[in-house]
Image (cartoon, rainbow, N blue to C red; front, side, top):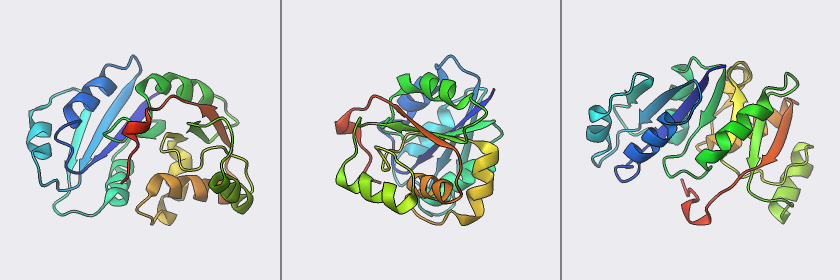
Length: 191
């Protein structure tokens, strides 16, 4: 079982080296694909100095947005499963093993990490709209089978690509489950 961890980055000079090192140290078979979306800070310079055998770094020639960076990562991935990791560690690194354990079930296409144990108003709305009960539709902690994600790829257009993946998977009646994960509210991504 191989995991492709996709890390889209834009101006992440303060966190990128640390997050790549933490992901690299996880005791699982993985490849790390970092897509630098033409950062204007020292991100590209830092990435050029890193050398891990399982690290692929791709540089966009112009800024195209997070959605495009994730699509580039997907197109260059080879793992059986794909996880999109924000450079600010929104989804705790301690949760990878829980997500991987859950998706081993052949009945599942996608595992969503839930930060909440009950639904809020917005999540109730999404659950009604898409016909599947999930407590945390806006979680960016999502693990999906590569073969399932490739079926969705032509439809993914939104800049909020993680939410786009989840909603397209729900519309296609893919098999989704949700498990609780830890998160630090101060690290929530606003991209």
